[in-house]
Length: 210
Image 1 (cartoon, rainbow, N blue to C red):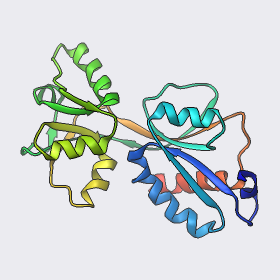
Image 2 (cartoon, rainbow, N blue to C red; image 1 turned 45 degrees about the vertical axis):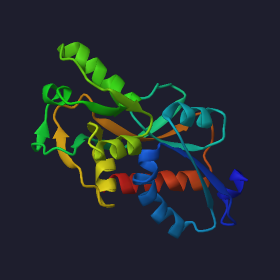
Image 3 (tube, helix red, strand yellow; image 1 turned 30 degrees about the vertical axis):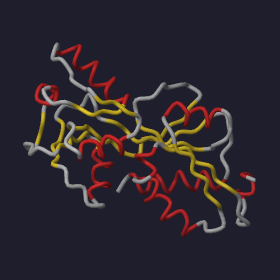
Image 4 (spheres, helix red, strand yellow; image 1 turned 90 degrees about the vertical axis):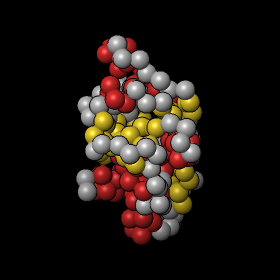
C-alpha cells in the first residue's frame, strides 16, 4: 500500500524511470534513500518516456525520472536535477569536440528520440543526416557502435556510467546545446505526495546538485 509509506512501518514507493537514468542517477538516489528509509519497498518501472507519463497519469507510479524533451503538460510539476551535454561515441578516434557538420558526416546509430532531434537540426542547417540504424534504447546504440557499425550520440552522464564498466569506445563532446538534455523529476500536481515520495524528491535534489 503506497499510503503506508507515510509511516515508518514501510509501504511501497513506485517510480517510473527511463533506462539510462535507472542505471545512473536513480542508482545514486536509491543508495541514500535505502539507508534512510529501509522499511520502504521500492518498485521501479522502466520504459520509454510516453509509457512513463502514462504510469504517472494512471496512478501506477507517484514519481518519474525523465529526460527532456517530452510532451509537457500543466498537470505536471517538474524539478530539474541536472543538465546533460551530449557525447559522440565511435570505434574510430575522435577529436575532443565534434560539431554538427562533422557529426552528420558519420553513419550514426541513434535512438528514435535523438534521431528526431538531430533530424530537425539537419533540416535547419541543410546538412544531410545519415542514421541508417535507429532503435529505442541507448544501451543498444552503444552495443552496436562497439561493433563498428557506426557512431552514436548519448548523454554525458550515461557515457560516464558505461565507462565505469569498461567501455572501449572513443568519445568527443558534441558542441552546441540544441541536443542537451535535462534530467527532471516529474509528478502530478493534483495528487498529494506520500512522505516517502517527498523524501525521495529531497534526496534526488541533494544528489542532482552534487
